[in-house]
Image (cartoon, rainbow, N blue to C red; front, side, top):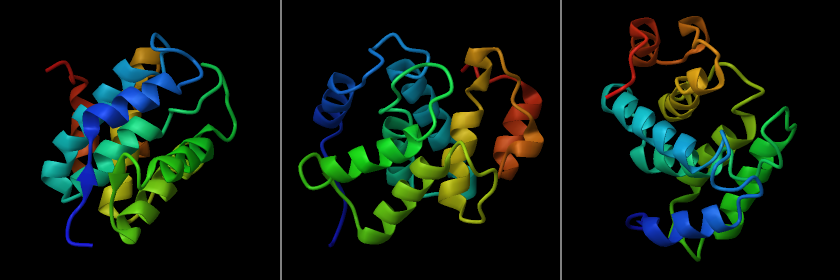
Length: 156
């Protein structure tokens, strides 16, 4: 495959339409946009694959069934990405493996050496203050993510 294809507007529309918690969920589209913003900012420093980061932001919480503890939601989001692949987006198998892993394990694993996976996880964790939880830099993967958490200011 020469390059990735993603119809972002149509993909976002589809994922939002199939989000069980609804558009105003604390884990919903506003959160996904902040994770995307955080991830793209970190990717400039970490060298992460921006396409995977953007897709992670959209899919990682997309299949939550509630805003509390929802065991397995990351894997459900990864499986939903698999269902959408081919119709709304196409990426290489290597990119998809990273996307799937990052989604499936984003709440159960802390660290990963892959800069793309680490960037995805940091981008999500940097948005924990929305839930009243301070982001601990010790639980982040990237140097820039840690720096952002220490500064405590992501309101740009």
